[in-house]
Image (tube, rainbow, N blue to C red; front, side, top):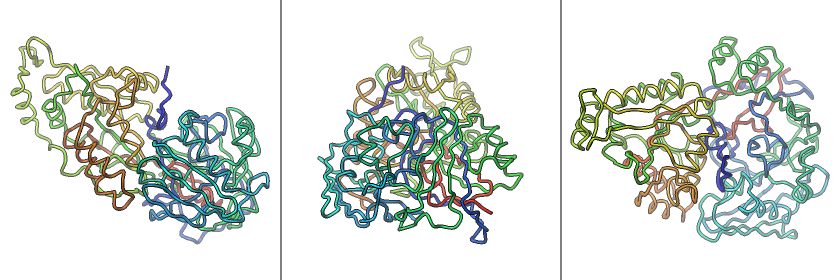
Amino acid sequence: MTTRLPLLSAAALLAVSGLVTACGATSNDDTGSTGGSASYATDATFTIGLRDDPGAFDPYHSQLIFGEAYLAYDSLLNLAEDGEFVSGLAEEWTADADGATFTLRDDVTCSDGAPLTATDVAAAISFVSDPANQSPHYGVYTPTVPLTATGDDASRTVEVTVAQPFGFLLHTVGQLPIVCARGLADPELLKTESDGTGPFVLTDVVPGQSFTFTRRDDYAWGPDGVGADQPGMPKQVVLRIVTNESTRANLLLSGELNFSLITGRDWQRLDAEGLDKVVVPSSGAWLWFNQLDGRVTQDKDLRQALVQSLDFEELVAVSTGETGSASDGLITAEPKACPGDTVSGQLPGFDVAAAEELLDDAGWVAGADGVRAKDGVPLAIDLHFVPSITPDYQPAAELVAQKWEELGIQVELTSDTFTTMSQFMFETSDYDVYLGGFGFGLPHQAVPYLSGAVPPEGTNLSGLQNAEYEELVAQAQALTPPEACELWHQAEQALFRNLDLVPISNRPWPFYLRNAEARTSSTNFPVPTSIRVLG
């Protein structure tokens, strides 16, 4: 059984594709734009191919509804491509590490015509912020510290205060999709309809097949005041569930889909046909070393030998299918709240001879069979990976295993499913090394997974006890960006220097467009008000 996490959902973390912060758009080399010379269609349909069935379209309960929610549910603020906040439901806002105040626009209505009130917004924030409600958005669009939200309908203000300093209120609460009062009171109705303020309304559901959304022609409060009157904005948006990636690629080529993620080798066909794409950066391969008592990887010298035996340039290429780049930190979602490279200069370089010397000095002596042992105990490591995340993880894990075996280490290579991975990472802690990236969108989201109590009582997945990291985190959490960013950077570097967690690669996630334009948010979904269908 998969444990329901009190913070980020296991699906969001492990799938990597569900990067966990919302923003206006990412900046890419391939933008999917025609440069302003396009001819737009009127009242057309924009069809998106989804690889997973999200089930009920309930933004506060479904573990697979993140970016999709913004079709029907607006947030207080929006994050522009340059990383600056622009208006959403709120026309004015102030924030520091102790709280935030949002002043709502006076013209916003819910899809049933009811005016949106400050009380409605405060109730939505309070619901998701209560861990007892088990919303997957808890810890994503809310702090993980106690929060109080109150609304004053007369002044249209929403006040949010936190019990201890938290520097990312605008990035979390400010971007929570707001469910209106009727839907919050009756979640059952959200299975077949929506109750939000977004540019589209859920009008049809075919379970297991599709969700259809229809444009609100009265919509006028999008990012920075964008409305539904934009040329090319579709009359309908259809989310079509197509689990097979090759089928999605075929549907893009035939024009039956306008937008879909293609991560496997089918991208070569799409590129050959000249389809536009937007590219979202994602974490590729990381090495997680289990440091709980009794685990051989608790020894830093051994971890250093393991890292030094690997040619990262080669591993970056293999772990990303030669499409990625070297990792520059734990956060890949663009635009970053704290941009910068936290990896360069923190890890030991590729040096097999030095790795062998470290093992020799530690008493791991190679026997006649080439396997190292100490006090009669062989040096053995189990290495886990999940190939369904990306097919490139298998050759990457095999390469790592090969290099470690050449050092004289017995390596048991284990291919896992999401279910078995969730069990050994989040419940039993029965592993030595895990190869795979996680989807953190903001620095604070990583903290519970890199410190604190270990499973099953907590989520410190590798049993880390890095005092320098914890001290820097405590200082950073008392500040807001950009003042907090240097401390967050130093905290990450403390992890990397100690080889607690070793990020190797970033990989691109390409979203292909056919006869359409769109910007893609870090939730891996088009920004609804950016969607255009070409004529």
